[in-house]
Length: 166
Image (tube, rainbow, N blue to C red; front, side, top):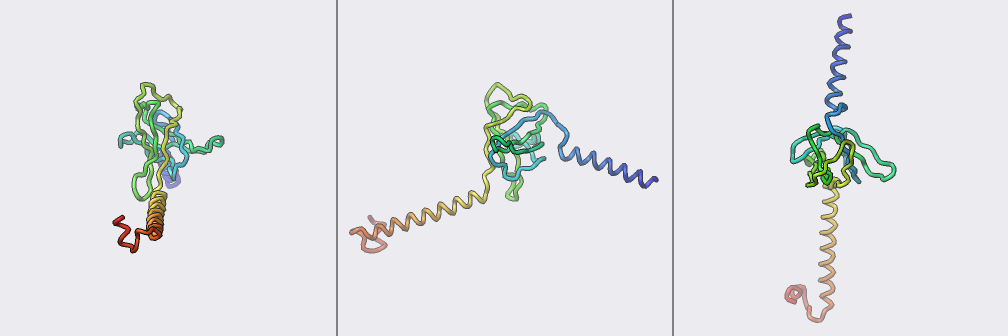
């Protein structure tokens, strides 16, 4: 009987602790932000302004009409967000953690609770950047090869070294 009561007590404490850690409770103001691609952003990830944590991601879903990802941001009550602010998804490390960074605008008008930030920037993937760099390097090498090849057909070019003295 005593052991069963202790088990139930520990289970209740664990449930309360889990709910407080995962952020199912509302801290303050709720705002929405719409993104084209969230790149692995999860519920519970941080929301930062000027490098300081001011909230967390409370939920995310796909808008079936616009096909944009809608992220609900749960910010501290004392945080006011100008209506022309920018929200962008940033990478916290090379290992893949993400967070939302809010860059406050200059407007005197503040967003109200449940308003949406439309000025957003998606996460730039490191693999996409590497692919673009490799593709552009390959394209540049091909272009240089084509220029050299076309110069050999010129009457002024007699060998490969004379290309650099044209």
